[in-house]
Length: 293
Image (cartoon, one colour):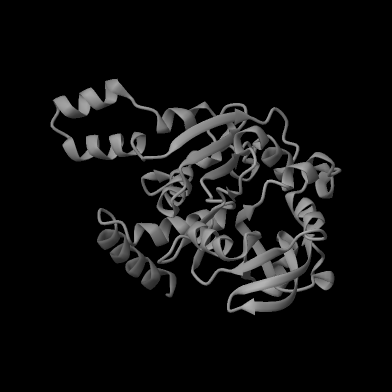
């Protein structure tokens, strides 16, 4: 069965970015001139996803507004001859994917957020795309997972090696054997293990391709670490009855879920943006000279 649907959880409180996120969703924080959630939606579109469900929460209406039309703004841009900006604005509305929204009333964990997509997904495989991770590669990571599914028809989780001292920040896999280059059989999945207990340095990053059987498991998954329903726990349970593979991502990953990562990502993208790259590069070089004194 073709993978057509994606779920983007966006109901988190964004406490790491307070006070900026007191009234604005963290998913709307811009990387240069584009909110982070738009990068995620664009990746889904490039991968061939047709329908996207965004699971949001209180004070997240601006996400819906961002992907909706704004006739007043468009008319103003048109009347003032700002055609390039008009085109940019309309492109956000006309991305070519169907966007749907649902609410997670309480921050009960990633597993709970995904469970709320059950009726949207139905009996189809689907992808989960977390907004904290922006990916860069020739082939979108979501598409890489979809290509794996075409061969295995099994759930596949994106992983990447991280420094050993950082494994406690992630879900981590205990690998068995590599069935082909970059595709690993997994013995178990562990949510945020202590550094000394981590079964490997392969951390789960923010892309999952899951079969619909995950919903029956999530329905009976008890709250785990942090008192929340952990998606990693449900995946580990599913792995006991059907194969779940790990796909090793070899591209670039940008973590925008914390202040340092967000600033680094903004600089990286700013150095690629045609309007900012030259001036920003010059500024960084000059700043480097001052800091090295």
